[in-house]
Image 1: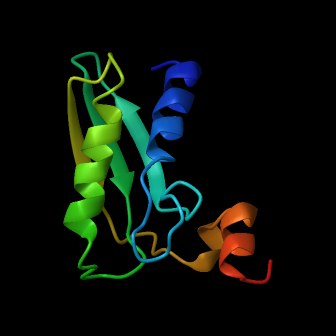
Image 2: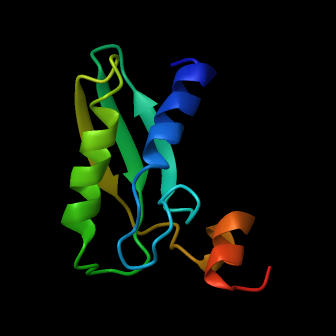
Amino acid sequence: MDEALKENLMGALENVIDPELGIDIVNLGLIYDVDLDENGLCTVTMTLTAMGCPLSAHIERDIQFVLSDIPEVKETKVNIVWDPPWSKDKMSRYAKIALGIPD
């Protein structure tokens, strides 16, 4: 997958908003990797801010929806991992400012 396509995928994922925090999942640092294979299977490796997040199914649906607009993506798989664990250090400067977290 070329860098331009990866940037396009990450840009689409910026449209997925964490309903509890009101910030997109990319700036929250929840996306660890995005990959697209030769068959059009897009695998999103991500974490959540907490285990047992009640909105994980909602976030997964939103991911599948935004990536379905990209012609190269035929199918999306969301792989939720807990290692490495998420921390506020993974957040972008934008997300920290928006949430009032000191940098």
